Image (cartoon, rainbow, N blue to C red; front, side, top):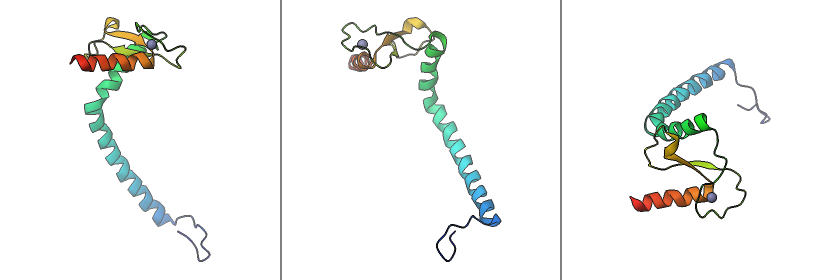
Length: 109
Ligand SMILES: [Zn+2]
């Protein structure tokens, strides 16, 4: 809302309340969407965070032909694609080897 000189006026009580109602209804929708999103996608994040939670962040690269020196971070790569709750189903890789590794996995399928 602006006054006659184009300055912003803080909303009246009524607009504040209606804004509150709008944001509440939006929140509800977002919540529903978030729940649906979790239903189909949560698995990926949850399974990846399992290995980090139990074994910490990856600290080295086990890639056979790793050429990347001092990458900014390392990642846990899942080997079987089944995200087993076992450390043997994961290997530590730098982002470069991880990408190559995942591509190999896809080629094998
Ligand atoms: Zn590497």
